[in-house]
Image 1: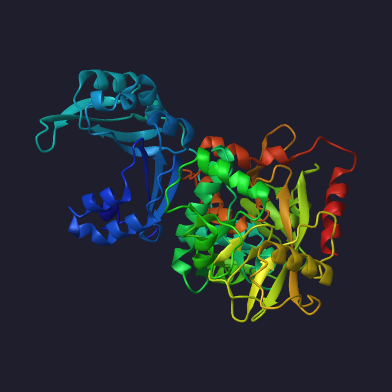
Image 2: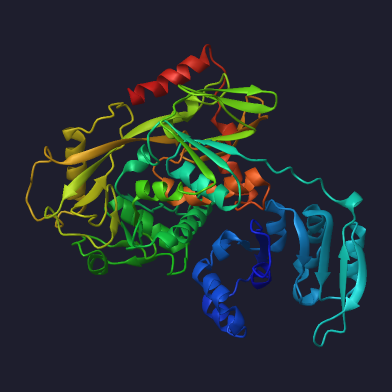
Length: 561
């Protein structure tokens, strides 16, 4: 289908292909199968390069410069159609006999096919079994026999008449405003622009990536749960998508050096042992290493082993933000501080500290820890602004690591003549300036984690440089992505949130930007229902208190004095 899609589509056309695979093919088998079509080699190579590790759940592959988006669900087809959000224009059903794949042909499966069909949806399958034809007809499809292919004499094809179809979700018209040009806002702006949407990107700073994204280095890293649950699935899916999203920026902005999750304490060692006992992930994703191998992989003497993530690494987030926003459909409004959001005649007026209002039908608040001060509701929200200071370690202080090492602190490879370590987790500190105390804390924690990594024996941290950022976190430490909701759970038309990523932004932001762009444009969604619940903005509202708007603004204003 990708080859057909690139033959003569409109400039802004996107082909979404949704597929469920209960028994996904191994990468090496897929490569052998694709060799049968040498004329498709460029597309086949791209598919193989993006093909996900074989763990259950949903995977989004962005192919052919964004013109083809493959939503690939590894699991039972009924689970796929029950949890995915999309409306199909055409169905190509499993070509095997129903007896070989009975779940596909259960009444529930066909009912779900009907639910995901829009007016005029076409359907075709190699099977000509009468029971299947009758089941499709019972769901409103008009079916007929047609000549088959190859040795197959007959097949059945059909369509769904307009009166039988589900209502089509309206697509948001541009331009779409995004408040906040950090990593989340910049990724979303670029994603929408690549899909043909005009974007107005607003930030109080003079350039993109000037807030928490201004750190020189950040690691693409997640800590997976011992048990495979919804949070673990979201983390894994996001991490794998981030690898794909950052690949075009390899070596300039994205450095996939590999990453060691060090078993730095007895407690962490025990957790990793239990994790390995209960899970069996592909080695392309992660695998255990002992202390000797960890030392060889990182180039730093490691006192213990850990988990090795061969495709992870570090990112220069601010540089990426600035590259992402340089797109002709992204209209930059930097140096503009948003004062309030006001609904009027079905549109939102974005008032700033200077110049005319920006007027749009839809907007996304991606302002990090400042987000709650902008939400146009008289409510109190369960967000927290947590100070984090990183420390810049000068060249020569320690043995230069060749990969990212994570434990109680993280240590990145050298970027120029410094390596970044950190970060502190200061719950009750609102000081925006770096302090020697925080630098000393980072250094002491790093020495305890990697005692033989240093070339000195106690250099003072007083002269080290550092940088402070404020993470926007939530009460349950899960991100917030989707439409703003009020106390009764009703969506606030046209206003969306993209925040609460905490220290997970580099790993989570690409997938969440993809998902939010899907929602804004009524495209098939990259995240299935059970995982979407983790992101729901409705969970962020507290019970009403007196003068809640003022309290919310004050609690967050203290962090940015």
